[in-house]
Image (cartoon, rainbow, N blue to C red):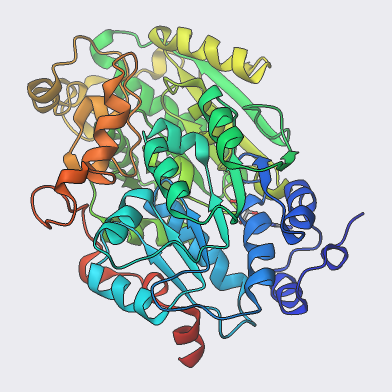
Amino acid sequence: MTKFSDLNLDPKVLKAIDDAGYESPTPIQEGAIPPALEGRDVLGIAQTGTGKTASFTLPMITMLGKGRARARMPRSLVLCPTRELAAQVAENFDTYTKYHKKLSKALLIGGVSFKEQDRLIDKGVDVLIATPGRLLDHVERGKLLLTGVQVMVVDEADRMLDMGFIPDIERIFGLTPFTRQTLFFSATMAPEIERITNTFLSNPARVEVARQATASENIEQVVMMFKGSRKDREGTEKRKALRKLIDAEGDACTNAIIFCNRKMDVDVVAKSLKKYGYDAAPIHGDLDQSQRTKTLDGFREGGLRFLVASDVAARGLDVPSVSHVFNFDVPSHAEDYVHRIGRTGRAGRDGKAVMICVPRDEKNFDAIEKLIQKQITRIDNPLKPADAPAPSEARADGASPAREDKPKRTRARSRNKPKDDSPKTEVQADAPVVAAEVEPAKAEPKPEAPKQAPRENNTRSRSNRGRGGGNNNVVGLGDHLPGFIAMSFEERSAN
Ligand code: AMP
C-alpha cells in the first residue's frame, strides 16, 4: 500500500498529515499528488468526500515552500464555487501548513470587507482562495494581478457550470500566465467541462477515482415510498414519518443532515423537529452568513445533532463523522442526490442515506436510480394508518395544519407564481437576491436562470462592478467574521 512518505511531499507537510491522523493517501491523493509535484496539469474526476482537497493542497504547499510572494501578485490561486467551500479549502490549508510558518493565504469571498482582503493581498500572498465573482471584483479594482500565478486550481468545476461561472473561469484563465500549472477537479465531466479542460489544460494527468456520479459503496441507501392519507395532511404526515425514520436508526444515528428541496420546508422541518424534542437547526441561503457559520460550527463540533439543510450544505460542508443523511424530499436533479448523500460515508467510513419519496417525486426518483445504476432498497412506511397524526397532533407540529401545509405560500406565489406544488429548486421557489452564491439556481428548463441568480450576487454584471452599491453585497459576515477567514498563516503563527 502506498504511504504518504512515498509521495515526495515536503517533510513538514508529512508531519502535518500525521498530526491530522491520516494513515495513508486516498486514491485521488495517490493518483494526483505525484503528477502535480512533477509540475504537470492534473484533471481529477472525483466527488467530494474522496480527499480531493488534500490532493491539491498538499502538493501546492510542497511546491510553494520555496520562494516568496510579491505584493498584489499571488503565487497560486484556488477557485471554488461557494463561500463555504472556499472557507473549507482555507481550513485545509491551515491544517496542512501547520509547520510552514511563512506561507500566507487570503480568502476572497463575498461578505468579507474588501479592506481586510486588500490588506492581505497588498502584503503578498502565497495562496489565494476565491470565489470567481469576488476575485474578478478585486482584479477590476486594480488591486490584484494574476500574472504571478504559478499554480491554479479549479475545484468543483461541475458546480461552477451549474452556477453559471464558466465564463468567469475562462476569463480568469486568460488573466493568468500561459505557463501556469492547472489542477482541475470535477465530480462529473459534462461536455462543457470537457471543452474547458481541452482548452486550458495541457496534456493533463487524468485521475478518475469513481464512475461518473456514483455514490460511495460504503453508503447504505434506502427509500420509503410514502403517500399521505390526504393531500392537506401530507406535510404533517411526512414530518411524522421522518421522525419515525430517525427513531428507527436509534443510537446508530449520531448526527444527520436532513435535506429539503425548498427553503420554506427547511424552516418548517427544523421547527417541527425542535418542537418534538430533536436537537435540530436549519441552514439555507436566506439565513445571514453569521447565523449559517454559527450553525455549521455547532454541527461540526457535535453541539448540534440534526442539520436541516437546503442544497447549500450539500457542497461545501465537510463533517467527517456524519452518520446519516435523510432526504426529506427527492432532489429534482439526480446528481444532487449523489452530492447530498456524499455528506455521509466520507473517507472510507460507513454511512446511511434514507429518503422519503412521495408519488409526485417518482419520476425524479427513477432518474436517480438510473444515474447511480443501482436499485435503492425500499423500506416499509413506519406510519401505519393508525399512526397518521390526529388533527390536534398535527397542530403541535409547528403550526396549524391549514397554515402549515401552505407555509409562506402567498409570499412564494407573489414572487414567482409557481403553478403547482411540485418541488422546485430553492431559487425558483423563494429566491432572495442574496442567496444565489451558495444556492445554485438550476431552474431548467428556463436556460437563463442558472446564470442569472449567481450573476446578480457573485459574478454580477461587469457594469455594476466596483460601484459598491445596489444589490452587490452578499449577506455579510459582518462583525461575526470567523477568525480563520481573515488570518494569514503568518499571523496565525504570530498569535
Ligand atoms: P474532501 O473530499 O477533500 O472534502 O475530504 C473529505 C474528508 O476526508 C475530509 O474530512 C478530510 O479531512 C478527510 N481526509 C482527506 N484525506 C484523508 C486521508 N488520506 N485519510 C483520512 N481522511 C482523509
